[in-house]
Image: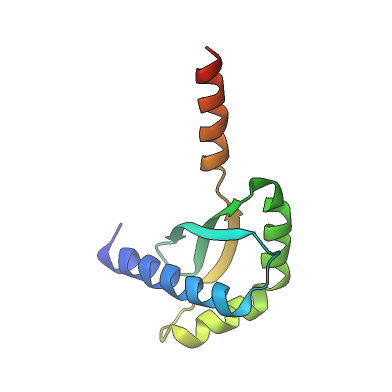
Length: 109
């Protein structure tokens, strides 16, 4: 992966964090974390992995992000001074949930 893509991923992650705090309204007690940002080599697409606490609200979080995608995309486009602008795709990062399942299995053994 090129240095440009690495820097862009970091920049997008920082900007999305700010946008989520200002623009996104979630349920009280719900936390949304950007786990990973992965931009394609041609900079046309960016896949954003999010983790949600509590995990049971993950469907709600993904639906909220899908509903607000145009607001989020527009706010990000204003912050990024570049062309082409990457299109966002949000996916659920289930690493935490999988780690909890494995830990429960190991404690049972």
